[in-house]
Image (cartoon, rainbow, N blue to C red; front, side, top):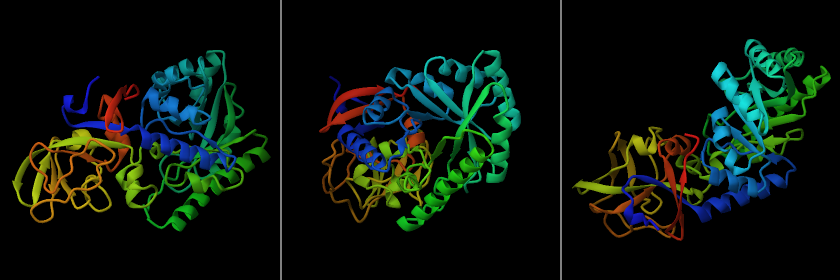
Length: 373
């Protein structure tokens, strides 16, 4: 079997024991609220992780594109929510193809787009389930509550659609480390969606599903009466941005990018072979480009496509905890050493790779193709 030393850096690794612990922890916590867990697969894009999420008790999967749902069918998923507007013939055809295999729902926030989707479904001799997209504060897609109610009632009269509920994503735009502030934001998101669903029911629409919550808000949103499902994605792998604000511990970050120190030009600087093509370009709240769990004194301060510059204290860096495997410890980083870097935003970092290297106790136990890139 291929070992880590046989692989050229940079490449992403997944510490499977950490991943499994994350999936179990979240599945248990959400199940205790009586709310369904429908994780967003855009974070990992792999059949293997999807299969693990379903085995842990997920009700189905969330995807950003119908093509992602098609790519993940080998996981055994039977229920897919496409949390993105379906616009254009190609995506509509993919949605209908997916609907021929598994239970599918998608979303609407525009009557014209809903009408086009209705016609395509009607022409295909079927009906598609849709959720009304509600803007609960992020100001991205979705309609304000009053308009969302009107759209849901109008769409329920279209021949090819079943309006089955509402969905929203408020994210957590302030990235505040205060857990009470996140809970308040999550409760506002959830309450907005619940209210729209109740008003749709009053208007004669059977809006049973109330789908809310990403990783920073899902546990709190699940506390709100009337919520039926939450859709965290990053919870599976974790990332540096969410570790910084306390959504999860750095030790719970299961995915890391293995990089090699390729230059040590000065006492206070090392250069690794992981840049934006491995880590993506998202800057952290502190202006850095990732965290090194085994070398907490290091600051990843500058990045190019193929280069990452690490700022070192003094003439080296003390070794940290390398128990997760793969990273090289020691009192000084030197050319040829390997380090593990937790990306700031894991989702685009995954999408830059073709496969994930699965590790258990530091040993390679598999390579997982990123089928939904």
